[in-house]
Length: 153
Image (cartoon, rainbow, N blue to C red):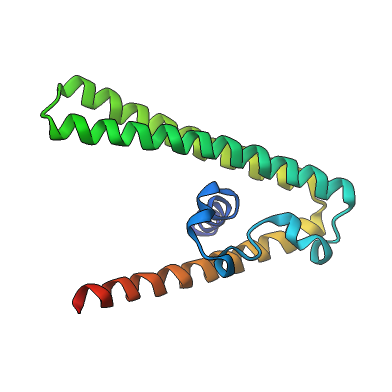
């Protein structure tokens, strides 16, 4: 059960995260719940609500990712310049806090989405998430193999 929850959370992050932009158009196809309006029998109101939830999360994730990138650059600079250990510790803590906020918001968004769905829709959506996570993992595996092959040449 814990493994299933973990897989669902990984899928959620993949499905909602603004970082989806680093994947090809084919890999992104089907990333958003409102793309399954017909399969899930979503009403127009549900579709509108879900788009709003996803847009809100994406906006927040983009802002948090910028903050995380800035903190990461600052940390690299501190380390490279043999910076103060307390500043390094604080930067690491700041980065962890940003990541925790992003995870929390992902969970909150998922719950808001689930709250908008009826039991049948929710069951179908969980199946879609599981399939999407598997396909995304396959795509990442292909990239990893291709990347390793390029390094060996």
